[in-house]
Length: 203
Image (cartoon, rainbow, N blue to C red; front, top):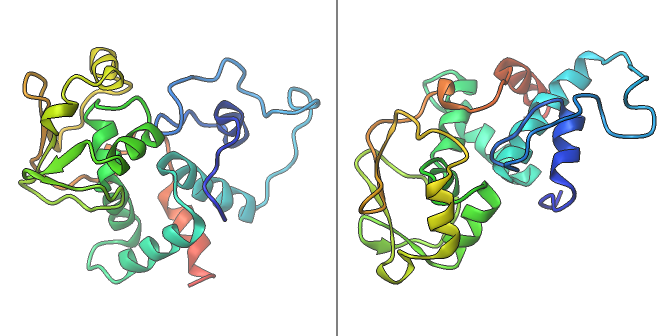
């Protein structure tokens, strides 16, 4: 399944959740999209609830289905609970760190900045959005990218507060990973157990 490039707010309405990584916009209409969205309420099955929770993280973090399955497989091999480890791995992605630090308004925008080589990790250029940051690593902008308009605007009006596991230096425009993220760091409501149950039948 390819990366989603369609209407973002419509997807948030369909999933009944504001996904800050997907779009800065917030839902004004809380009912599902479509001609009958405000009047028609279909009974949701157990599978439907699991699928909805899975789709939340897939669209918020901008992953393909194969990528997400690999992360779930990695999480299952961990000594931590599968759900907690999965969200830790998702939050540690470099594109997400760039977004959570306020350098970009959304994760798709952060991914583009990373892919174009604007960011460094411990002084070395990293242009792989899926790179997993580790404790103590410093994420910074290249010198020539310090005054990119999109970065300046985003830092003046960040989408979210900087999480506790990142130490942000706005003057130097750096972010240091002070600890590993936890499931409490996820900036939208999520039932992680339903996601674990969804993949339990597939892996």
